[in-house]
Length: 370
Ligand code: ATP
Image (cartoon, rainbow, N blue to C red):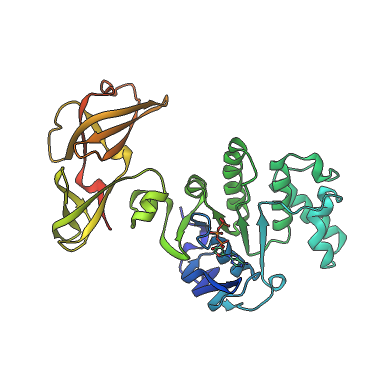
């Protein structure tokens, strides 16, 4: 589901050919390189990528903490490049909460409204609403130090939402929480975003987090947007080797295109023969063939029908309760990972050392530019 604002209209946030070069110790560091993005009103949008890929810099340029070296930032169609952060209708939430320890929860949340001389009755109403939204009603008089990490992050969220900005920018806000709490907060953040209908831009290096919460994800690598799409699009159809490797688990087999028609290609993989795949690369080009582990069937007999198939030996079996992960070593030493759900009707299990066939439907393999 896209955010309510996915209808045609002015995007909430647009970045046009944004670049940022830092000067650091006499050297230039190109943190962001020509990024174009349109983020729709009401969207939960994530910037996802490894450390140093430029996601925080991109977000800081949206907030106004950093000026782009070139390019334009627009909020609701209006250019804001060079406008200071406090004059932009966006708030930011940090991993470090940045709460005032000597103030109560109420005073922390009310802080920005007081600075703007909002009347007392309006402040009380807005703070009560914000605390209800994050399920902290009744904790108004508590000091942050007496709250858990998750609760402190909720206070930071209430403080950022209390003046109803048009967009909220969140930089790894759950990074300091342990895994269980982080997963609970992911669901919670998504609920809050849906309830308030505010555009969320979320920075994370955690692919699971981005897949769980986002309407759309921009995968970043080396200062560029590597791929843009819904979680399902990015997971199901990684467009590059980088995305295939960064998101989820992928099997990558390198090969050469021997023929193609339309968006179907035939790829010769050393020691495995000709394998059909989706891809438009020209004959002769080097590609990586990628297949997701859960799209692969594992059998002890040569599978019937038109499935792509390879044979190998089971090298590793990891039993995980609801699923089993197999590592299959092919003739040339390449290893493939196969995930199998342990449903009640699952075929008999394979064991280490067994000779097996791995197979998949041709449309589940993608030939990515090498
Ligand atoms: P992380 O998840 O580690 O924060 P990131 O994807 O958010 O990484 P950025 O923080 O945007 O990446 O950094 C991108 C590049 O710019 C990195 O090489 C970083 O070292 C560099 N960089 C960031 N801020 C500055 C700065 N103020 N001065 C110099 N170089 C910087």
